[in-house]
Image (cartoon, rainbow, N blue to C red):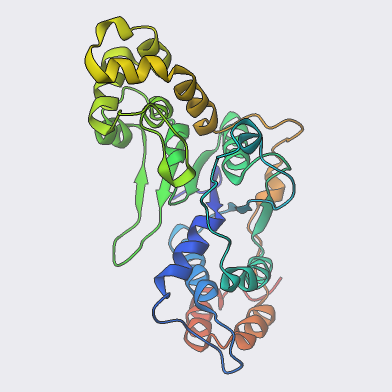
Length: 302
């Protein structure tokens, strides 16, 4: 496989949260009492990507805690019911950053006012314009809207499942759309409880797919309510603004200003074996150190 023009972008927080909850009933601790559950699971995942995909270009993207996103400014109830980040994850984050540095994998924080989704979307589109094939490694369905011939969604292996790579055809079949971009309209109609995005009251997955197939977009649906009848007609007509707001909240920004794609910032460099031994020793990752040696043993010199 020629990876010279392949870029892997890791959506950090969903994977870290998954790593945390995977061990929620059976956490792993060091002899000093540090809960390493999210750290070790994320590291396993990271090494799996390095070992199996052997990427030449990769980066991990984090949300920033600075400022308020434009979505929150647009709709103050956006993500309002999200719980505070668990303390275990807060403690784990600096160690995850250390491991990324040790593996010589670039990491970035989303600019103020934007979310990691937007920064990943912007990087992906800029890289696509320079001839790259991009794999967005995530568990977030919102990224389906970005899929093109050159941008794929990479769902990592979990609970014994093999990894999945979703492209245009997979999304068309899964959601009954003609183009992955229509996923935006699908979510806009249905809403998204996980982010507290309202959508159109009374419109579920079946109606949303039916409307997408008939009208193609939420705007055309809202302009064609004369075709509808009964309660759903009333609900949609009375909540047009909510539908359009939902579309704005769901749409991933792909043109964050002042960002230019420089491939050298994403290049995966050779890791330092002594640094790996040091951080893994501190975290008491004994079995993982053996796995790391198996992969990195021929790459221990700068």
